[in-house]
Length: 554
Image (cartoon, rainbow, N blue to C red):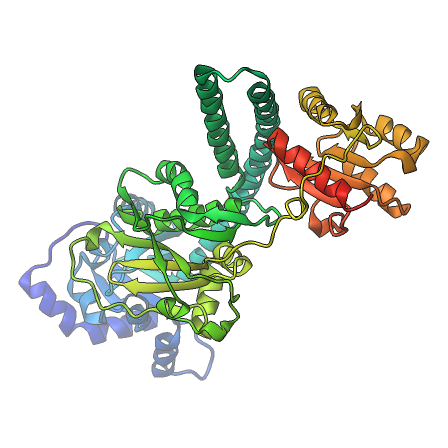
């Protein structure tokens, strides 16, 4: 077992011939403290029933002389293999444990010390088994020393410990992700503030400079850069964060193209990315751009985790004209305005299966109970987005890969609240607007834009100043433009005036994925007098929204 001593041909026969004599010797020497009234046969039967391996070996040759039946249950090898091969134990030790385990046991035996240790062995199926071995050296007068031991399978305990460590690591990872999410939201908020200032100043430039082609082209280039930067901040917000859904008319082709850069960055070099677009015309769906990016990112990360050794990920878009094309019945509740479906497809294929003949896929859709349960466990965030957009989720398991399909109904959005009202030039200085926000640049450009459009504007920098001005004459205030970063809490101010029955119209400016207490989950934005405006926004968007809010009657 410890030393690599090769048996002679006669030794193998001797081991087999004397196995019965050895068993009797072991019973006499190590089990002689049996209770009164038990025969040796009964003790032997009890030994065979123990869910562990009792063994004895020669201290000189390290040959096994006795191994109980429990060894077969632990490793799956017959007892004859243990007895016939003096190197059996060494051969079946895990390669990483072989050197230290042999050295440790040999040193303890030579010192005559009892010892206990845990190590890994490889069973007959090639799987790892954790063993706890309790070993003693038995010396009796006139007899050669023997080594006896008890091997116990402790694999279940090690699995529980690994699971515990895995859970703890997951908790730490979740906390780290949460902290990174908070940091990302903060950065996105500040960046959106800067983009808002730039965007609104660009609007002023466009309206104020003479019609010069060079200047017009330069302003257009700045606006394109603002749109690109805005798309990047939306990508940051989409990383594992929750935010209220805000659906608008969206070309799905542009959403996928916008997420392309982010997807490529999260994939390792071993995974090849292909993006295919079979649509020459826009695929217009009513969707939340941030949630679409979150869906794309979630499925990309899932593909990365499932292809740790490399592979191919193909993201494709294709149109379908009817519900039948995507495997559903029109009776499933789709709007009569639905003009077709836009299919977003993720095909994942591991590298070891690329080029292999694929099994005929059998599509399974999330409408069936078993598929829905499995999908809910594996793709919870994705299914939330699918359900929120009344889309259809499906997948096709194939050899070495999986294909995920999300079919979005192509239908127009309900008009935005601000867009339902025609622009009116009736706003005048009699409409008093309080603008409250901590960021001076945002506050100043918003005030200037509203003032240029005929509003009477009062900019304020703190909650205390806002409360003082509002409660001086609340009936004279027509509109409050409230930035979520207002010092000392704008959400509390809004809840306070609503609690006192004031129905003054409020526009909430937010640059983060969450709404800092202004979200619908807090019950604040459910009334018709409060509207969210996400940064960055243009001057025209702000004016249109303010005019629309006031035209409803404040």
